[in-house]
Image (cartoon, rainbow, N blue to C red; front, top):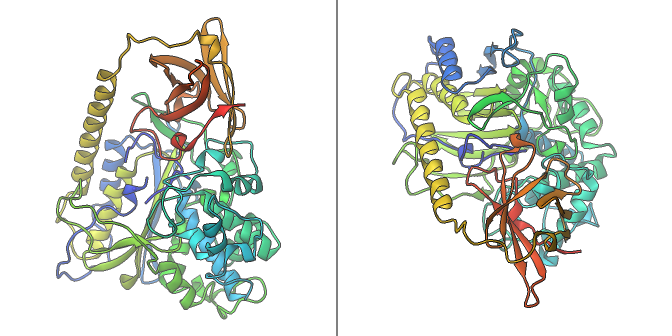
Length: 542
């Protein structure tokens, strides 16, 4: 949640890594699957860890109902000796979304809702900015990123760590502007998964956390898995959180707020993710023929979900455009690409693939399923580097599909990292070169000081003390820091919490009388994660 996925920079991934969700893909070739692990697996994992400065990770691979590997590598925390074990928990971030989708399908199997029911039939107070969309949006629409909201729209309601509860966040969605018409375009969001969590509570009678724990994690046997972001700080066998901050890999604070658990709150490990992938790959059957808990499910004895429900999870709903040229692989592209229910769907070497990434402060993950081969690969890391993960995932998948050794994936993703860093440096230099630093502000600094309000995000205070402006979001404590003059009436918010890596332009718009009439914000670098959706704010003097 973030920063989540399906979609660019390694330095700021959170809640939820979008272009990366489905990359990469290669044209089909006739090779016999080996159904084996690469003989150099451990060496390749360690090489990827070293290349991308990842302190620790865990890897799970399942195929044909067997766990080929469930293992930890490296250390739980930078500079400390405690190793990552197969049971060490990591934040799986947006890989939580498929659990939320599965929870809704469980309720559908009980007859408590249908995916094509209107959300307002179950949550009468639910509203988006457009009355038509509010009335027609279905349960399925909550899960597939086609509501009309822009990329990451509304994420500032929960990220980074707001004081708002889940119900308040969902209530404020009516004020978040829509970017496109209903069901016309794909744009990844997190906030509608919060609405899905509220819908689950309304129909199940218990909070999302309790329902997922009892109706999914327990039957599957995911005994080491928890359902809250906050568990990252509650001790035990938990990996620390790390990221590259100002050129150095350091420990960073984890996500602490539980208000968006349905979009990304699950903490899991190699052993448990192997069990979860096996359930999905076997059409909802529980490991060892276990029994689902709770009353009213029609999945059947020994099943978590019916085969029909699993097909719903994996069926493409929202198509995504295929780029004219893949930045990493040139013309080796998928033939189809889209989003299902909490899973991305594409083709890879002639096989249908269901995959998703997840990103949080200090954690990144990927799940990669090849259903027709009953193959599943999951990597969880305690460092924000998706390219490290993909260098491992595609090495394993290629070997299993009979293409081992055809491509040096570590070299491919190292080169991609170098290109991305070079491109970022060029873009940042261009922005700096265009700055008209000699043009000072139009007003005395104290005249910018005021409290400004956005209808959905709340109050933002600009203060002036000893000739220095500062900015602070009332409901997001970490969004606070000095304002440095950039040019004209534009300043840069330099957040005191530098691990956010999210500096923002703050532009004061003046009226004919010279007073501030509105404040606009924008990301100060293309490296800023999409969940910092400053561009959607419309701040007016309170």
